[in-house]
Length: 237
Length: 175
Image (cartoon, rainbow over all chains, first blue to last red; front, top):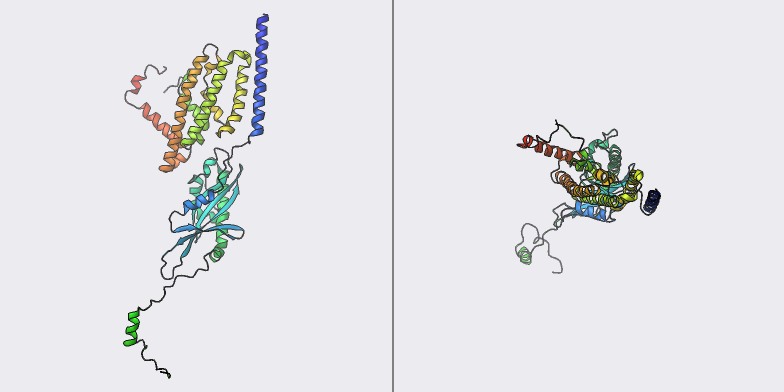
């Protein structure tokens, strides 16, 4: 009887020690670790994304300029041998960031539009969403694809929101921020076209071809209808 | 079709059931591998702890101890490993009931090891299927968790309708 009692007491002590160890581990975990696992993206991810978007060597992003307190990254097509009337740096598109917030945390998107306002690319730069909803912010996700397809409707006041299974609040927040970005571009398109770094660059004009030395001699000996030889002689001569 | 619910705890279908809590986040091979490693590590740690120290606990408080253990493990490992907090549901569903019986606990420990191998392979396959079909072939169903369900339904349909399946398994089907 006493042996059984002793075993029971030992077992009870073991249980108490076990509970204390668990409580200690729980407190340590709550103090040292954040409540939610958030995905932190590198700071240079924007530059990497811009490099990806400018796929060919002729298309490059230049340093950003500011329009209405928003940084615009201009995308130029560089013509090394421009034709008549063509600029060397031709502005074809521009990228800019928009911010938004869902129930779970903030996010930053990168929009790329051509100069007519057509949305070419949407992707997330930073987001702080819990695991499980973060996959809605990856490249070519269902939200971004549906936004690219319904961008004309997004500009309207009563636009149909893209419906994504399982996360209506996230898709609505993303669509709202993209809509703000598109409206910003529509309002400031003329400013962007006037203020970008190569706006003052003149279109290429081909120089007049110079005559060769033999041609000049022939012209002086046997003047054609240009009237070069018909000039009156100077008095000194 | 009949389902023998009596022995469901010992059925290999338990592995598929255990994949359900983290089914939504398995979008790539890497994520499948991460979740598989964390869940299996948690399972083996839990199984070995309760196999070794089962006799030290008061018999009436074993279930409570197990519940507290799961709660604390869920808190710690979801932060450390960067996995979905519901991973502990998977570990709990993979845990054999035999662990908590004195005579059968080593048998249960072997079963847990056996299940963990199948489970980690299953998670990698599920992640790979979703990654390949969504990113490579652009099948929109695979952007959602339903794509893997479709694939498993197709696989089970093919398994059930293979030639000679009914004759082979006739004796095992309950009347």
